Image (cartoon, rainbow, N blue to C red; front, top):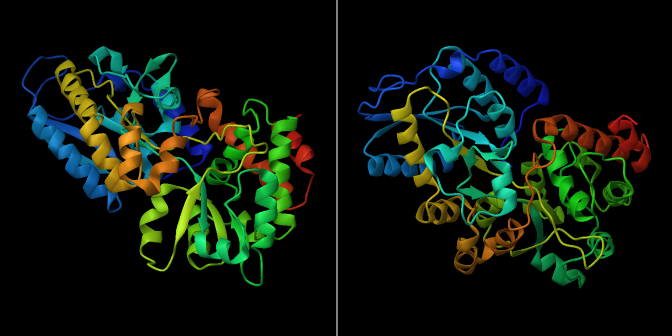
Length: 411
């Protein structure tokens, strides 16, 4: 998960955007006039890949797709926290881009305003995508965005530290608690995860919640209580530092790199940083499940590419060519390898995993990964806040896990 901003910010932006129906029919930049079939020579793109290496990798791929489509790409990158505000401003000034990238949890809220065109309008293929990935780009049974690559989270472990302690990578919750306790010594904790009061804290909790049958529609259930009890037990036993309450995922990675944590919950985007330490030998496995017969289920991260409703049919058709090109087999594989992400199409999984063994666990996990908006749609941000609020309440010992979840759910 690369970016997140407050549900209040999104809600304000979407509310304002919904009040601008005339703006949504405005035209973007370029030579063709609104609704015309004139020649299109330039396509505008907005995304939030403003940091390297993503900025260059995505830029080069867009440029190549533009060349294939016979247009020049006019690209603008903005910070992730500014993207929705940018979309709002462009809708107001009738300058929506021809192609818009969105973090997948934001798609339903923007599609709900009428700002996006269904990809079926342009006959873009949605074959060979797992249900979770299609769900991330779907609003009211129509696909509005496709993600060329995706990600999720798993359990990283330091091979040397586990071998020294005689510990094997855990597969169940009991094994995780035992391993984390055995690996905790002096300034070294057995495990590190992010339990902060942001969407990241919720994101890192979802695997234990979902794999145990927890449901985001109502978090005050025995299944979610058991998952939160696991997180609480790990912190109370000092197998996980209480600083997890404030850590970001980058902080978790730093703890692992410094050998202050023998295991960590994190994503494949950390692999380049880990690779800079030649002495670090690590492995990646599924985040443990409560019982061995349960299936590991992770949250789906990644960005979707969409075609806004600019009111210019010629430009929209050309923009759709760019979105389709970004999602080609060749580009999915190339971007996944260079960005340490996972190609979205199921048909590419086996080849990619064989050629990129450090990403093999993640490649398998995305087959069953779930979109955060899959059940709640536009209501997800509010429920995500309830989840991380309950986590904070339980881990700071202000309430038992069951009570913390009931309080957060509003029961």
